[in-house]
Image 1 (cartoon, rainbow over the protein chains, first blue to last red):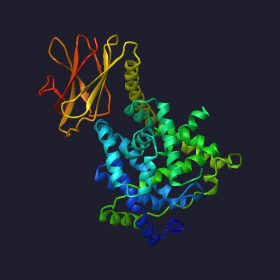
Image 2: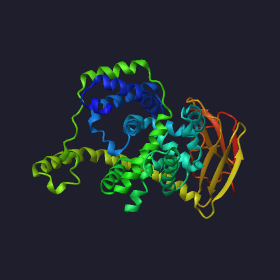
Image 3: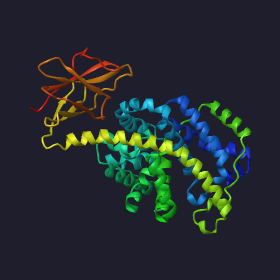
Length: 175
Length: 240
């Protein structure tokens, strides 16, 4: 509803939307791109995109929250995979283990949502690593397979199973 | 093929596909209602992972965004014909089709460039993975491990027949950007540099084992050294 008003160019409606989504968008983008200056840039692009494309949001295709977070995640991942970031890839690879640690400590410490933390805990280790390396660090499933030294097919399956378990544990989406 | 594409639904929901696979999967989605439904559910779950790491943005972000918002007009909704073009292809007016085709041709030229790059990257990653798998699956592959003097450990899988070894560290301290772990092949002569190890978890392949009897790992300045400049934090005897 709010997005409907945004789509019609209502700036005060967008301000309300901003209050809801700026924190999640910025937090996620920062988690993926890591550099605060770049994160701010990407978050700005995402938030302006929400304003610009609000009319394209289709509630048949999911919640507004998922729509916004999908936009944010896609942009963040594009940024870390862009040519400019190619040079950082080596370094990102170097951080792979630290990523593990951070996923273990930081996310678990920082996850404000007890439920998400609890649900992540119900995943097998490989499911959790596959999902979090892709989602929080922006790796492709091929890269995840390489990092974890497991076959591609296994990673594909673990990402799907892991997310299905998350979905069911969180009680979101359709079964 | 369909099954294979469908198996990518999880990877798609967390944006873990490269550009080519992403497009292929999206084409598939448009024709597979059950896949679209599953994708929606998994995206909702992924979004929760996202909101769970929410952080207050710097206050100036709001000013910047609102300044843009004052300048940029929201897009109108997609005209029904365009948004629906797939399911109503047969009823799409030819003029619209012609315009769409012209657009696609222009975009395809541009995407071609991106596609090649993405494929290139995937191929390189695969090549490294393949080499590692070749060593791991060699008939004479032996696995040996050792503890590091700091913390953590290292594991070596070596194939004398291939003259290669895969080395992976685990639980070793992270190094500052100014330093790196360097791998050495040690034998009768001087230690030979065998690659930089980017900390724990990322396997490195050392080729040309030759007469090396053990591998060593030292901490070196970023970029590595031609000869070790510090005492190894880890040495592991290679299987004969």
